[in-house]
Length: 162
Image (cartoon, rainbow, N blue to C red; front, top):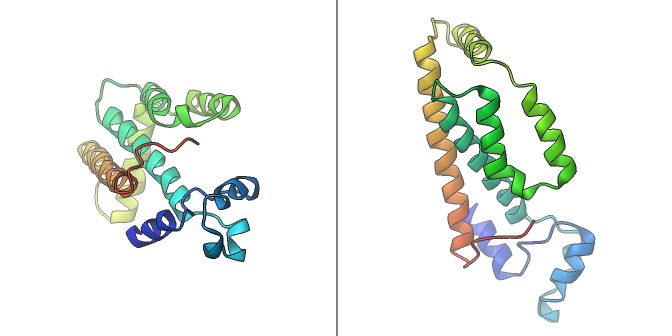
């Protein structure tokens, strides 16, 4: 992953996401470095950026979900507004709001996880195990997001406008 991002930044390809936008990016590339495939190129770096936003959201969500006093819908709403909402247009924010309002209750979520994991693991999965799982998910999501962001920081990019 690191080498692909390094390659794309070095070759001014990190922000190539769509034909019209690529035309602007190609103007920044030395003429002798332009390749025919660049016109329609879909940047891996850009896809990773979407992943960084997603992992930031999952980390923020799981940090809230592991706190028993948070309603799942409140946890989802706060995490969304903090991590994903700023990158979405009005239509996506509205759709997310509708989806978030349909979140299950904490009891339903826990019961569902217990039932599924007990079946998958072949042993009794408990509520305590659910909270351990939430902690693991929060930690792993944060670690992955931090690594992806470090790839951008390495190229002196701390923010990419969406």
